[in-house]
Image 1 (cartoon, rainbow, N blue to C red):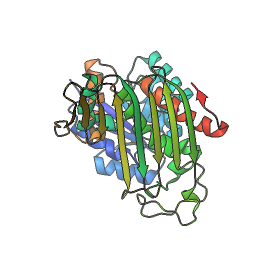
Image 2: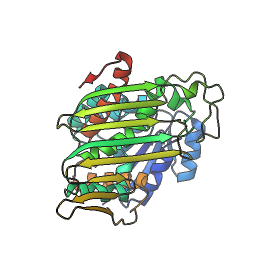
Image 3: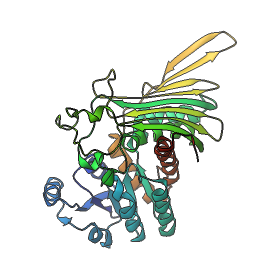
Length: 351
């Protein structure tokens, strides 16, 4: 069987993390790329041996031999590009967030349903060996009924200073949908994706207002004054099954970490757990003993960004469901969007 042919849209950023997966997969071959930057496009093509380069993504999408479109653009362009690709009969893997609003995610789901093709959000944390091991334990009942979670993804002066992240016209939002989408998606997945029913949240920009503020991850560049998105978001979420979640995300805090601290606690009626330590905490009430155990982990099959691409291609060939269903991404964006709504109204938002 010939390999699935992949076209990448937006080659200058996160696409670099996807390319090893397409190369490692026995089922795929990257044959084309599109980008608005001629320099980025030429450099990417030379680095990866790809000669079909498009300045207009619509031309790539229309190419009849392309099977998969990999959307790696800033957030605000995800929905329209993905919908166009689905309507052209392509399978689509799209970087997170799937789209910056629930309405846009729903449009993508509708286009997927009309096309009969696969649509997947590139939530790479799900594909690490640690995440898969803990998910298997939870699904096997180690925690019982999970009724509360605490999750955070906090950075210390590690704000991305590029316009694609800091200008709402490109990003649709700040830390909430840039990194909040990571830890929230993983938490909801571990919890079994219960339906969220209400959100109380705040979103703010404080440290970034300092004219000397800078980002550790962008060559110590200063934060541009035209930044119009939030650096911090906090939320309390209630779910239909009675479970609750406390969520904290930030690009820049005076926090005890060199760059990034991403952690999650899950609490069930049979046990608790911590990710990424992958520990299970249980109580033997008969012997009055506290039981702590660490999961046995195997080496990652591939780096998680690569593994998500490998598994997406395999799902297409197997006729299997999307490894990250868009309906689950819709839940994530309903919560994150409600944080913005709650900040604006100063009230709890019902979903």
